[in-house]
Amino acid sequence: MREAESGETVELKLLERIRGTQASMAEVFSNMRMLIRQITILIVQTELQKKTRTLLTKEVRREWKLWYKFEQTGLSRNTKKEDRMDAGLLIYTDASKHAGAIVIEKWKLSEKFAWEEDLAEAHIGIKEAAAIRMALEWYGKNLARKRVTFLCDNNSVVQGAMNGSKDPNMNKQLVRIWTLAQKRRIDMKVEWVSTKLQKADDPSRIIDTREQKLTNEGFAYLQSHLQKPFEIDVAATEINRKCAIFIARKMSQNAFGADFLSFPIHKLLGRPLYAFPPRKIALAYYKRLLQIAAPWALIVTSYEAESPIVTLARERGLRLISLPNDCILTPTKNQSEHGFWQIADNIAEIHAIINRT
Image (cartoon, rainbow, N blue to C red; front, side):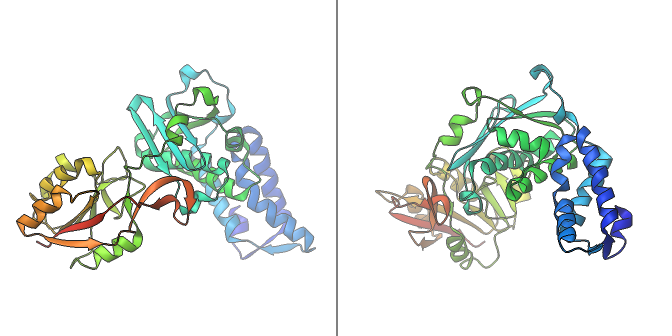
């Protein structure tokens, strides 16, 4: 492979020898079969053009990088039938047309999320694979060097995890899954479980209309009223965060911290903060923000009557900005231009309470 990479073009015979070696390795490490797709495509194209040399494509070079990583770490457990008692940490993942879910009982974690625009049109198999990928992206640090078994009720994903998929979009998800596992040295297996025993099945079908987020247009409108760009989203999940740095409401390895209400204030001083918490805890967030010497904005929604938080902010002399009524999204079972999110149409007023200190 390194010989082939040394120049811009490569001999067809050398590509065939490399692929032959990779295919032999895939007999032992069957989950690596998904990583011989690009070289196979290049060989076939070269043969059809009746050439003996060809340009080495960036897709093949990318595929080979994963082979080098595999050489260092190795991932073979996917080929073994093991007793569930030896499965390590069990992670249930599932998907429905409109949402996905991750359940880790040992951590008392149940996370559900509506599909964004990028996956809204995808078929169910890709969504099932995406749920596994998201679990690794969100919780990978906590899974590092551990034995983990993902339980999935979609057989095409289970088989694809071993052999790859003919669907390039599915294969992209599967390659990402194994790349994340390699990065964290996770001893990972994907195993089939019946839908009756799939503990993420019910959460993946639930719509939680309390989970809301500002549209990108609404966030940009709000940002224009603050002198500095928002730096930290203090009431976020992986799905709805608006800043690269965020404080999670739920467990997340990528967060700056968890639970804004108990997060150390000194780490937030002077840093522009954005907050759009669920309505039930909005007052607690307002009181906490008042204690912090920093610029901040808090999103507050009013329904039949004006929110008491807006009244308190007005009495305190804080600046209030009215936001357009079409700038808040909520999950839905019906697909829209926003994926499986829709404009919340039951909100009377949307205010941003602004502190410029």
